[in-house]
Length: 91
Image 1: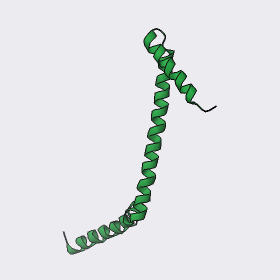
Image 2: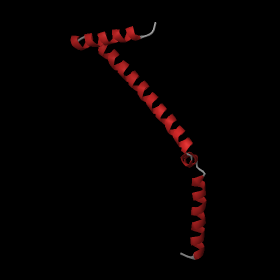
Image 3: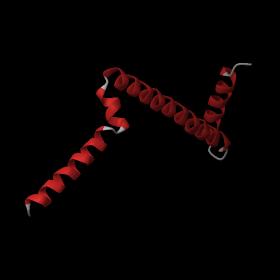
């Protein structure tokens, strides 16, 4: 490998490093305030998604259990849970 090839490779690496340093993610990481705000927003979105997803899945599960009538114990229990949930809804 000649000196000229080495010089070209180093210039290419330098350009890529400059491009990498201009990336938005690194600019967020360089500022403590931006990093904290980014992580706060990320955590809130994760928490909201978790709560909404669990609510939808649980409500579908309880509704499907209330539709099961051939197993009286499970069907009655699910119907009672569904009635209690309906009673909790604001009028």
